[in-house]
Image (cartoon, rainbow, N blue to C red; front, side, top):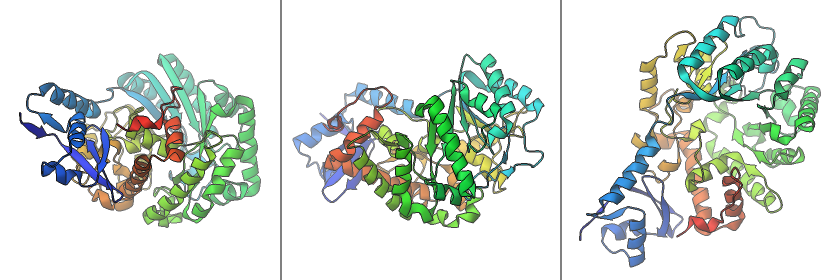
Length: 472
C-alpha cells in the first residue's frame, strides 16, 4: 500500500524540536531531525501516525483526505466578500495637533480646502449603493474628525438610513469636546479610539506639545470613561525609539486608567515620521527587544488580572485558529478593495489608510478611484497580484506562512518597491521573531504565557480552552 507526501513546511524551534506545518496551518512539534527521518523512511510509529493525522503522509486510496485538505486550502484563499463591510472616511485633513510621528501629513487647523464638500456626501451614498453590502462599519479618521463633527453627524444619519446595520468608530485626539463632538460620541453605536503615549510628559513630547494640553486630553478622556465606561474607548500608544526603555511605564498608565487591553506599536515609517523618526526605518531588532520585554511584564500582570496585548493576541489567535482576523496587515490573501477601503476628504478612494499616506507624501500614487467615478481595476489587479504570501518566493516555504500576512504598502514606504526580498523587510523580521517566541512558549508548555494567551484568544465568545488543546 503506497503512500505519498502533500506539501508541508518546517522550522527548528530551539536545538531539540522541529515544527511541522501543513498548508492549511495545522501544526505539530516533533523531535529534531524529523524531516531527515521522513525522507530516510526512518520514522517512528508515533511520528508516522502524527504525520498521517496532519494529512502530510497519505495512502494512495485516501482521495477523501486530499479533497478535504484541498477544500480547506481553497477556503483560506477564497474571496471573503464581494461587498465592502468596513470603510474609513476622512471628513477633514485638518488637525489641531502636530504629532512628531504623524503618518497622515495633516493640514493645519485653519487651512482651507481640506474638508469634504456637500457634493461628496451625495456621491458617498451612491458609492455605498454600488459597492457596499447591507452591513457596514464606518470609521472616521483624519486629520482630526471632530473639527467637522457636523459632517460626521451628517454621514452617520445618512448611513443609518442607508444600511440595515451600521456601527461607527471615531479616531480622535480628544483635545476639544465641543457639544457636537459630545453628540457624536454619545451615540451608542459609536466607539472611540484614541492615542495615549504614556504619562503627561510623554504625551507632551510626542503629541500635545505642552503638559497643559496633555492635561486637557486626560481630563476629556476621564469625562468619556466616567460617562460611558471603559468599553466605549480603545486606546493605543505610538512608541518612538527614544521611549523603548519606558515601555513598562506606558503599560502602567493604561492600567491606572482602567484599560484591559493595549496595542503596543512602534512608529510607522510613514508621513512626517519619515523625517522626524528616521531611525524607524531599521529599528526592528531594537523594537522586538523592547516589545518582548513588555510582553514579559504583561504576563506578570495577568497572574492577578486580565490585561491583553492586542497584537500578540491576534497573532496567537491565528496560530490556534480560535478565530479569524480581518486585521489587514496580517492576512493573506490581502486583496485590496475586497471588504475594506478608505474615502478621503477630497473624494479619493484608497485601498488602505497607509496607501492614502503614501499618496499624500507623493511617494507613489495608490489612489484607485474617486467618488462618482470608476474604480481602477487595473491598478487593483497589479496590487493584488503581489498581495498573497502563498505565492511569494520568500514565503512559500516559511513554516509561519499560514499564520502570517503581507504588507505591500509598508514595503513601498520603507524600500520604494514591492518585490523586496521578504526576509530582508522589517515586516518579516518583526513577525519571524514573534512567531519564534510564541512557538517556543508552546514548545516549553509555559503556563505563564499560554494561560493568558488562551484567555485572550477566547475572550470574545466567553469560553476558555486550556492550553493543553495545543498538543496531541
